[in-house]
Amino acid sequence: MSDHATNGVAGETAPEASSSGPPEDGVAPGVPPHPPAPEIAEPPTALEAEAEPEAARPESPPAADLPLFAPVWSSKTRARGSLGGPSTADAEMSTSRKREAIWLIAATVVSLLGAPVGAVAAILSPMVFDARQDVWNPAAWIAFVLIVTFWIVCIAAPFGAWVAYLRRQRVLTWLAMSMPAVWVIAAFASVQFLPG
Image 1 (cartoon, rainbow, N blue to C red):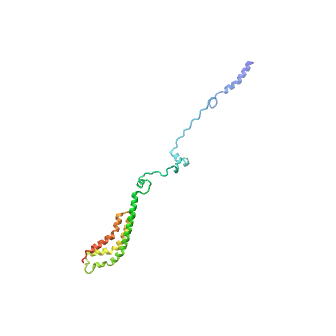
Image 2 (cartoon, rainbow, N blue to C red):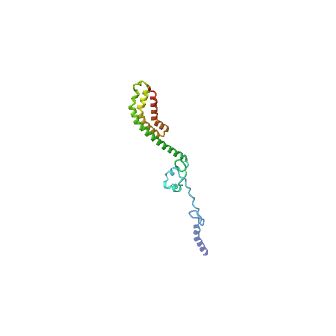
Image 3 (cartoon, rainbow, N blue to C red):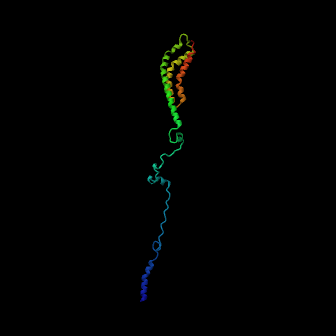
């Protein structure tokens, strides 16, 4: 009877021993489970980088973090000085232009005042062909043309001089402004060749 009881107990305990086998997940009891392998992120392609929203992109540093007076050493900065102001050459050129404009205004006033004088001389210009002069004398005709056109030159010369001045053509400016004086000298020289 004791054997039967022992067999009965053993029979009852047998299923417990069989139930203590390996678990369904394959991990033995008492052994910690292995951590999952980390996922490796793949770098985005060029199309994905372009399609990335603006909010996800790193922001540039604010302007307040940048230096206020950052030096920019370019050729223009060196030409104009370290602080970007006008250089000495620019200041001298500006002063020269102002002085030239003042002289040009004075010459314009003198030339325009000579226009009425030239108009009166044009009216009296036929006097170069008086009784003692030959109509076929080239000097008389040269003097006549110079005297008649003098008032026109007195008006046209300042106009051409200011146009050349605004285009920064200094030589042409004063060449045009000197035309009335050249006209007067040429007229006096031609009259000297007339017989007295």
